[in-house]
Length: 318
Image (cartoon, rainbow, N blue to C red):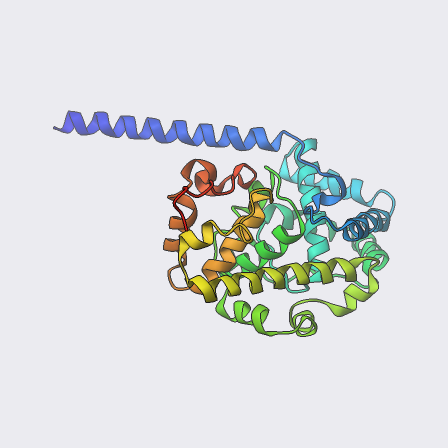
């Protein structure tokens, strides 16, 4: 009996080691590939004006860095974090995405240690950092005192995901540094705010009116984001009033889950729906909506870019 237990234990340890090796090799493969997108990879909304505004914003961001400042930060990150040039490019790309969102939303949480490290390294050159912030936004953006990563609450993470996914298309690298997207419920208070507050009240409570007015293009980008988020909430609310919390009715509502839309946007709508009507049972209903019904597509959500929209309903669905 002890011999059999020893054999089973050996096989368990061997399998665990193999899984860990395969996982790390997969992460390493992603890290060693470039995942940059033009103009920070804005979500395709069909709004050429907003796309042009973001193009101008990214150009303004790049022009705001003092000469050689980025190279100094890059050299420190490469040396201290022991990463390659390609991974640096990927992290720097994600940091710029974060900074744009941070200028829109002053209390934006920082869920990534890897991205926060870049911010810390930038602060090692205080004169250049202050010059960058002044050039870009007219004032210094203070680093939050609270540590990042582990202290981000589930509701804060859901808020971050809502903003990130609304504005940007995740790459395969994005969940490597930010962690898995769209697995947490929005707070009930936030759901209520987006359903009841006016756009002006939303801006006053969550966004920076001062920053939006100062940075070229940021007002229109923020205004468009808010309109799209409010539209999602109100469309979901209309659906809930008709069908309550029925998962199948939601899954096959093509207005809420269109086949031709970025699947991460569909999942974002799903998080809003579950946060609205299944707040207390969010993990269970999330599992039923996404994991059990589409296990191959989501596959533990380590790569949201491979997630596919729900399959078409059966012919007798009504």
